[in-house]
Image 1 (cartoon, rainbow, N blue to C red):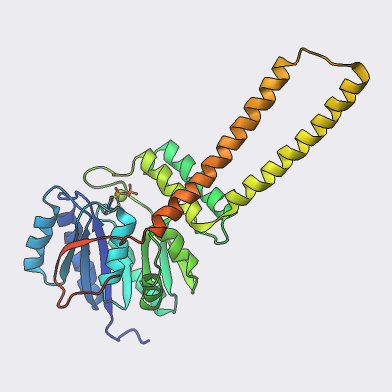
Image 2 (image 1 turned 60 degrees about the vertical axis):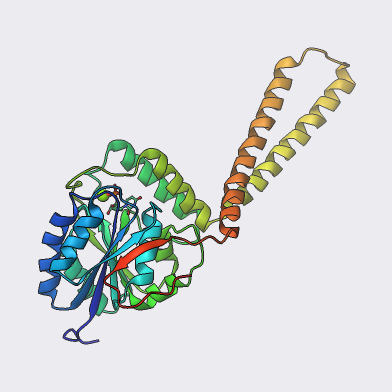
Length: 320
Ligand code: UDP
Ligand code: MG
């Protein structure tokens, strides 16, 4: 690929109640894309916004036909919105980006030069997490450590969805039938040549994040259960360990009873054993439940997302 060849760039922007953010985002992004000199499309995926986000995007589309809109029928979550974007985009390189300007569009140029060097995935890596709260930093760091220890893939730490993905990888991702779409994990799972580009992540420009701790916790569970079954196996090993300890303890009790006779007091030790085993059983059932629930949701084979309306696409896109 020579640098002067004309490529099409697809910028995927999931938006959920972002009426304040769309305009400043485009004001900063469009000149950067124009300067890069390639063809581009900006695909907004409206993830069921209840405010004027859609109306503003339609208005902006009148001024710039490269802006396109996919309106989902309700809020499906950012991961599924991104999946819709991947299904509809046509570019040779695809860039998912947040609308709140936390992912600096200035980095796109650097992404493209790495892509031209032959990398299939070029991801932004946050230099620091200064724009995050203390708790978020700690929990994020714990999550990455746990994820990378448990799963077979090594997800780069502090890399979000902001990245450039080559068409080859997009085509692979489109064939994934799963409903649990932990995109960061999937982007890593596919392999190919990948490289990180460091950047400083500024705070959100307008509005506030829609990711509270409960949502992040569920997101983390999706990530871990989606990429490893090791917790299930650990339950088995733990059960084996407890059974071995129980065996040793029973043996000691039998010897003691034979030698010293029946000893009635023992309420405390009995309670400790009963409660401990009850707790371990419920905990392991909880882990089973996490997997079973996800299996059930996958087995239903419901669509990943539903599109209510599109504008800017010539023909309907076949989506499974
Ligand atoms: N977003 C979305 N659907 C949702 C939540 C968020 O499409 O259910 C979009 C949101 O509009 C933004 C991006 O995902 O463009 C990142 O969201 P946010 O800034 O709230 O996340 P954070 O930066 O805090 O991780
Ligand atoms: Mg944000």
